[in-house]
Length: 292
Image (cartoon, rainbow, N blue to C red; front, side, top):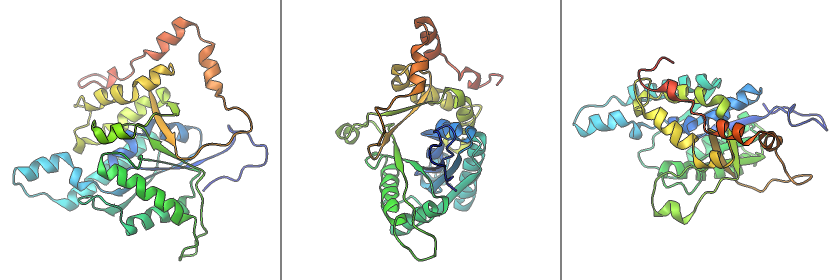
């Protein structure tokens, strides 16, 4: 699925293939939905993958179980997959995959690693987006670890006939999983900031598809988290209203000192224009009861 660019082809002309992996269905969109939508808009191939249905983290089902009510696991699985598919559709992503495993005991499992590797050799992505392997939400961290093992697996000759594939770069989410000492021991300072201001409304609409997790048009959760996570200090420091941030696994190789054309565009703005831009609040139209 990766394009074969001609020698000398510019970055703007190169078509990419991106695989976004989230430990639970919601995670695929929560940490990278704006970036996924941007790549869809530029004509890239974007695939969403989650190893699990996230049944054990279905918040409404957990609450029902605590009350002693019977929970229909198969119905929850269908609901979670429907939510993810509909959320990805809001971003323009139509290739949505779930390996179908449970996450009640989150740990590295060979069969899940092999499943991720199978998707890698099928999709043949240039880039993978996933959780940092030290994320203190256990399924997040384990998913990051399994993705790294799957990278090595996908590079090898395996049964089944599909040729090996090597991914060019892995980008880890930098949002902390929980506020605890584990996160403090391994701080994740992003070195890649993606301005998702043009797609933040798409991401907001996508997140509101996850009603099983207390999102939805009648809930303030998406609007609150959208401002807190995507309107974070990392974006503000780089003078953009909404951003998703990442940390690459490997150092990148350049032909010269790297620079961003966008940085030059930002510098051409007057101080007043820069301030007005970075302080924009775009999610008020997603407030419960507002007319979107």
